[in-house]
Amino acid sequence: MKRLIALGASLAIASASWAAQPNMIIFLADDLGYGDLGCFGHPIIQSPNLDTFAKQGVRLTQCYSGSAVCSPSRSALLTGRTPHRNGVYTWIAEGAEVHLRTSETTLPKLLQGAGYTTCHSGKWHLNGLFNNPAQPQPNDHGYDWWMATQNNAAPTHENPNNFVRNGQPVGQMQGYSAPLVVSEAITWLKEKRDSSKPFFLAVWTHEPHYPIKSDPKFKALYPNLTDDVQKEHHANVTQMDHAFGMLMKSLDEQKLTESTFVFFTSDNGPEGDGIKSPGRGSSGGLRGRKRDVHEGGIRVPGIARWPEKIKPATTCEVPVIGSDLFPTLLAAAGIKNEPSRVIDGVDILSALDGTAARLERPQPLFWRLHMAPNMKIAMRVDDWKILADENLTTFELYNLKTDPTESSDLKDQELVRFAALKTQLIQHNASIDAEGPDWWKRLSPNGGKPKGPEEGKKKKRDTK
Image (tube, rainbow, N blue to C red; front, side, top):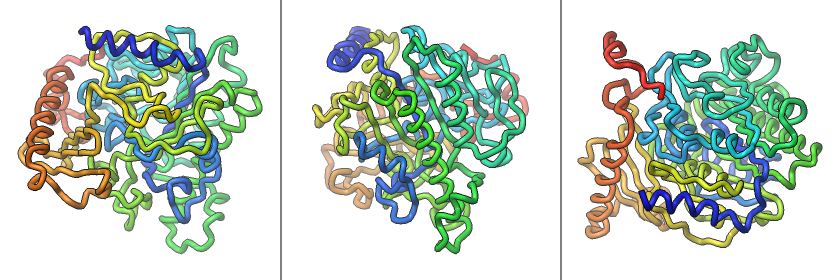
């Protein structure tokens, strides 16, 4: 307990050199690969707004999502806790028991309590019973205003009909998902929020998650692509980039740019194999893709901007992860948090502003994918990454500094290091299991539905 309180107290200390209570935006893309933006090396995809944004702030070359699939990454981002610890261990199918419980303390809830006005616009995917009082909804986790879908925009990104705004179905919308999601956020900023308060805004687009649909004007930007699937995907990333640009332009028009801390990232690596349909995203040459805890499934684009606080046109090579946003934004707002439970993320402000080349982590970077057939675990300590199957019987060891593509397994060469990391991984995994709910033991690994027709009836739902 003393360690946890000390960690919480450090949040207020770390924020001393930063402006008190800035506005904050987390912009989260869906299935955007590490190599899917121009500013991260893609030779074809046009992402002019994010490329410009990267020049205005810091580009994070070792930015990780909290998981290799969507729902767990989102839960880690909002709680600062690794997914098996907070219970959201897999992607959440419609109707599933798995959800983000109100017993978890979320970032918007804490910011709301500290005087922030809050809004979520876009994909939610943190419960199976969406817009149903049987499970918590966005407002139960600290959002004053929300417009969301349970998972994907349906039937596609074009003219979606499954959005819900503050508990009321919106009906058929005209347009494409990312611009619609951003338009909602802009309307809230201009007309709905309490402008006397600082704001926290979560904008979580569906793009480029399948099934995708892109505005013809963005597909027209790729006249030389003969593969229609590739053209649709690349245009979809550009569609998301365009929406991001809409939001940044609105901040400029409302004179909010200087006072707003913006963080852009993705929930996991790219879909598919990159060659066949679906999925033409790029892992940037890293091994693995979505649903894989090798680098290509979890290393994602990361860009942060805070004028006069973060140096423009800079690069950060310090490893960071989605769960770091919880303590980081609290620190930026000057909010002291004394958690009664383990927080896996750390304050990364000193890495973003270039004053720290390394971060001290009481908890190691950790990923666990309970999703057949890729039931794997991974842990990173400094430059070393160890992987294991879920039964902790087979292992791999890589030095990411010299081998970012994870091509040379060093467990037989680095015997002492491997033994130490193996022991640490086993112990760390056990401590997480001891704290989190047992959903992963008794529910399906694919979507969190009951394993059998009677299974869901045997356990009372834990909505707390």
